[in-house]
Image (cartoon, rainbow over all chains, first blue to last red; front, side, top):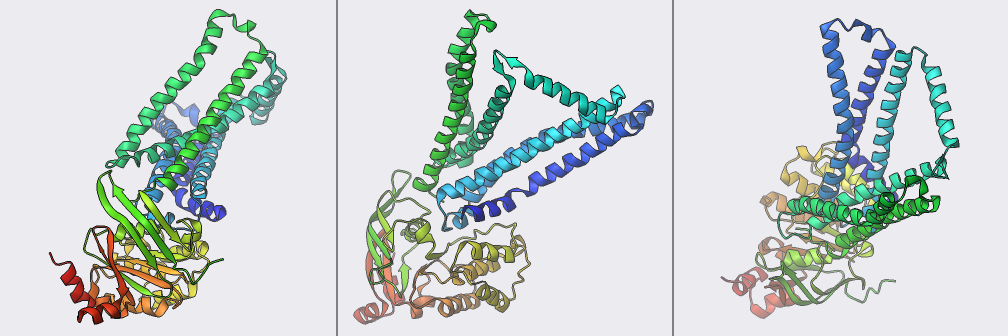
Length: 275
Length: 237
């Protein structure tokens, strides 16, 4: 049933993010093509300047809009599909509540990955073409230099820890944060359902209250680390301490994801009260 | 294994309190047998919809139990119940054919052929987008979706409220010609005249309690009047 739910969720979720990604792709191609032609050499022309300004502004706006669009879609889709009249359709399907929730999380996560990849490729694409244009070395040379730099970085160590380990940690942390962000939205909406009236307002209040609580929690957790950094020279901190810090950060974010997942499942199965 | 000698729905001491104080269903005990058409009758606010929502797992009881085929509401019960809510709940962005495909995908007992036959009879184009259709047409589509299943229990919440007399006839005809006679139909309404002829049993609900559950014929014989007339007498303001 999860597969079927994923298919339906993908169909229902994808329209707005797909449009945002297409707009980003078009703007990226336009910007890249300006570096491939003699466009920037005609800067004395006011219309060219105006066009260049507008296209760069549109591009920056679009980068922000893609992320914003996916966050909004995650919230709206979850609320509308489960807690409005559409909930009568979804909650009477012969599926487990956990599958219902998982389908929402996985599709939102997939779209986030697609959007981050799209944004990275877009910026990297423009930067590589612009870099090649400015240094006048050509794209092939630009990529060669980039990968040489990356290889050098991989051979280095960071506080006696190999840099690839640091990269692995960063990737794992990003994955945890990816799910954390989605579950955070879902949790706030589920908390909003606890309010008798003004459930959307309740979700918004929950968003800020939870944010405050999590920040406080993070602050408390990082006090020991900041003490260490304050009293000791950074170079004196052992690789073991860094490893422990990295491990704890993963554990905390991962743990919070699990707590939020079970809270949402509980709310959707044991506390469901569709109006 | 389902024991068909047992009722399809058992309700034990069921209570639902809204907002900590508003009692909607009060210590209700009820059994819904198999193969019967049962009218769930009561005035507005008597607790009919709340009871139906709890059977469908859309509301969580404050206390008590709802058992469908011996189990609490969940994926297994939802696979055997075909539910028509009192509101339109279909996603407006979907096309008629998409919602039919959606039902066929999730419900093993759904007949696409039957659904398309009913659509054709009502001249509803399968390619039409739901948001372009009138409220009445959307209600008819919902009824088509519900009655295209070979469910063990059909729960129809106010299926004839707010529709014109011709549409009422069509709805009742659709229900009668499409349901499996081994199944049960729980039909909630306060428009008794229109449905009295098809009811095998009636349940009267008042203040969240089932005050009477009897065969329709027995009610008529015992009180010397129609169920509708008796309902008016019992619930007179």
